[in-house]
Length: 501
RNA sequence: GCACCCUUAGCUCAGUUGGCAGAGCAUCUGACUCUUAAUCAGCAGGUCGGGGGUUCGAAUCCCCCAGGGUGCACCA
Figure 1: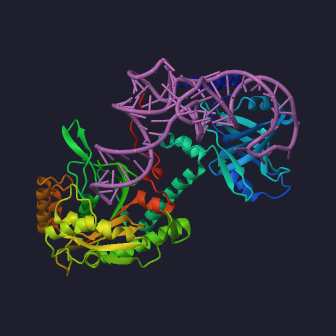
Figure 2: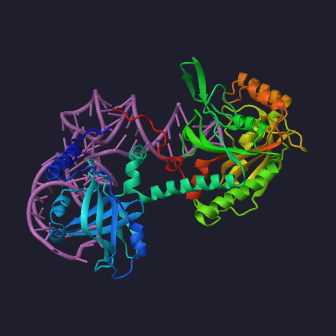
Figure 3: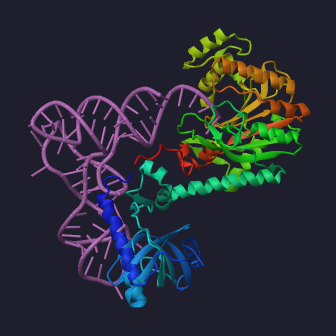
């Protein structure tokens, strides 16, 4: 990139010249360390009027107001911004060096706290050390305060492409971006603590797999040279985690990346983060309560509330979430019993409710499609949709009472799916039949149908206890809790096309 | 994958009917010891995303390409 960079070259050259000039004055432009004993936030929080407290802080110069023999500047550290004040008569040569510094340079500041006559808590500099000379100009944004005291940002750095490709710049100049990712980290660690406190073991299973399974999706294919064999990047953790339940663990979970070779949009990135949990001797009813408890716990832990607003929708994670039977709700909305209806009737119904049937075949997929049109958009408050057609769920256990459905639920919030869970199928004979059915789907052209995993069958043959399993898409959960409508805004480095030139 | 929209200075954006490519900020020069979107004066900065076409003349109209965004399709 960087086409047409004459002007940019001028700016880069200027900074290079300054670097040379600083070196010739004996200033090391890339220092080795600097010990701090405070930060921008702590200084502001603990400031007492008339107290000149000695502090050492470090940060990036983000605004400069040079006035001949005295200057103000704002430096930004990982906690925020604070103003510094420098006088030539006090810091002498360092003031000359300061005049060669730019927005973007990282400095170490020694000084004492004070309040300016306009009331801003600041640091009066007694020693200024250049820590890193910035060789490239940052996008300049400016902040002001309107009459109501709200912060107004001018010339905000908004180019989506540049922000995603150069996330480091985005993080420097758009503080709210940083907040989202801090929240993301806290959500993940809160979830991890919750699961560990319940006594479940965090494990790691293969990302490179000779067979892919556990979900309906197209995989990425890669090649191992020494084994001279193709391997798949995992599309789900499920089948390996269930092998570990066979192995006797009292509950295992994994938080990690899955990969699906499919389209990209506001809710899909080719690599995404999943949390999968498997707990022996439990079923999907137990898991529903568990999800309610876990999500509530995370929202209270990280946000101190169970109430959120997502994309103008009010959401409350306080239990108990609504239970919606897929079969019954479809009966109510369309008047047909989808389990008894034949494919033609279902197809007619699908057309009637306005489904786009391109590329959709088979009873199960038609049902799924009708559901997504007539039910899903109304699931704003946290809800569990329960009891799915067996054809859609080859790894789930048949319902103990209802014919044709499995014990499965998906959690929906704000019309979006956030988790998927079931009573796990542990009958190896039936599992084999279900896999064989998937193979038939595949032969009929369903590219996403499961492949048969004989080692997994073998594991089940040794005996897997009744088990409840759960998958939560972390990225989407983070989107909900941080009110982001694009998955790209909760992933540091979303997948982009390769930069040309 | 399909449709539509966007791409002009380092950043944010104007640019009329096709008629000399503009502003603010940043940079540069100078002034300025409590400023805060600092201020004041001056200078400079462009292959208008790339390529082709129409035209006396294209940032502007047409075609192709690239990147990005949005919607649809598919999926979690």
